[in-house]
Image 1 (tube, one colour):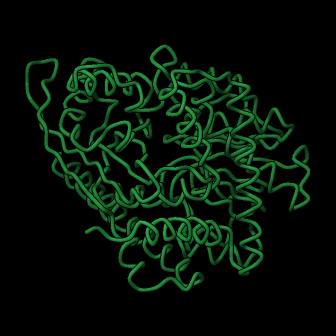
Image 2 (cartoon, one colour):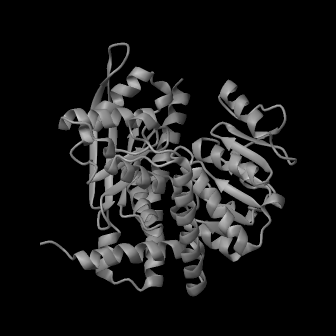
Image 3 (cartoon, rainbow, N blue to C red):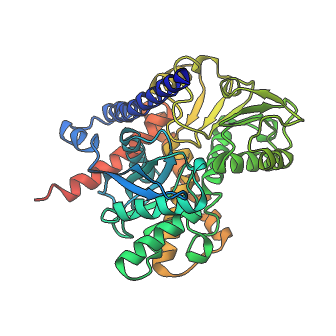
Length: 431
């Protein structure tokens, strides 16, 4: 038993170090793009820091009558373009450093696709799979009450992220609304439709990623019906992306979740696989495929790789062995700066997270607009607008990459940072 505790402690410490390194990765990426831009030192100092960080420790009454104290964070990176926007994740590895990195990336993401938002992020250090529905609601309401001074429809707008969903956003909205004394649908996005959610929001991240792949395939002269796809992470974004790639005629030969992966070189039956996961809780053990590890999945012989899991999956140790020609990042921060360089030198095109997974925040923006206007759009209208924004943004990022002879991540960062720097210069420093 003592050995098990030590092992868990070592794993927890390793997770903490990885999260702490994530903000260093975000800052390193920022400075690489700032060098290309020739950004002045004063602007580097402003944009390489988060504007505000709130850490809260809050009690939650559990079903057995006991009380546990949880730690949560909400970080706003930059509000120069407008209200800040960003998801809230529930995960046992959440740290303030991880949330800082994700908030910074959200700022660039919003800027790349031209949204009038700055970046923010939030999280609670918890394994939600160990909580009952009642405990999850108690935790959400206490966390919301603890950060309520920081959020608001014109200040900072949360959304779903890892292990959070429309129901959790409904509890957040209700808690905030009860505190201010009236209903405020615009305080969060990703809500249930009946509470002012948007058609198409649930599929937006995966759909936007596939729109990005379609745009890249034209430039790279790739026939998607002859291109094999691998998806790491079969959650919301990954499963949607896999299904839409399959609909386009691209055989999905491998997928994975946190338990492991499955591989079938002839293509997976995604409907049957989804039923299997719903029944067993994992994609592993699917009769029509071979079980593989997440590490093996990334190295499969494929044309398109979609990392849709957690951060830090593609690094210097495995980037040289990746066989995909095109990588589209549905996850946040899956590729290290060292891996970016290796992949670029090998001719692998990476559609970076701050562009490729911007479909989620884009449709969140649509939902926010609909809430302010109390005027819902159809799913067709939402998807048409999303495709138009992703196509326009791809072209702008691709042209920037060609102009500066840099990979797509640096090009996206150059565009995003330049936009936020312009806002900052025009607004000035108060007082």
